[in-house]
Amino acid sequence: MKYAVIAAALLSFSTSAQASGDHAGGHNESGNIGEAGTKNKVTQTIMVTMKEMDDGKMVFMPANIQVKEGQTVSFQIRNSGQSDHEFVFNTENEILEHKKVMEKFPEMEHDDPNAIRLKAGQTGTIIWKFSKAGVFTFACLIPGHYDAGMHGQISVNQK
Ligand SMILES: [Cu+2]
Image (cartoon, rainbow, N blue to C red; front, side):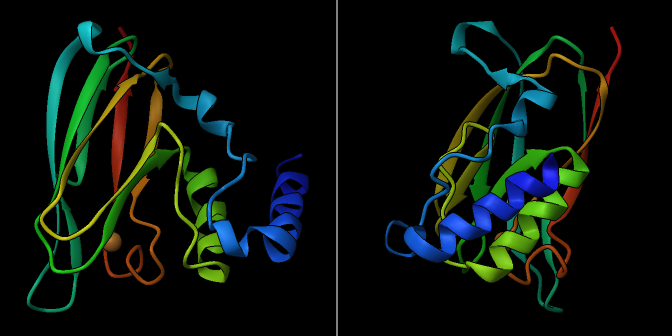
């Protein structure tokens, strides 16, 4: 099933999505980790900074995030670096599959509620309701960034 989705995504990207450069559907698996939240339900705000380090590493600060099952969280994300970065979260499997797609199609941009891409100096917000307990991954999937260190964990703890 997952492989079929990726294969279909690769096929459609290779034929039609080069120009528009977005996901054109096919990334609805974020339901595994919850759903887009609403502002008036937010009970926790988490600041996340993305940046490059002098030694060539790229980081998220913090790299470990704890939330509670059922909680609606506002992520306030700041790109303090010099290049574009993104913040996307999902199950580890989805992140790794998505990483492969991004390596083939680096210009691809996200239009998903669980992802945001920011230019240097920009800030942005994602509001998310974590409906299920589990350990999830967040990452920047711009090619090379994950491997330079841009990934972390969101632990959704049982109520
Ligand atoms: Cu990045």
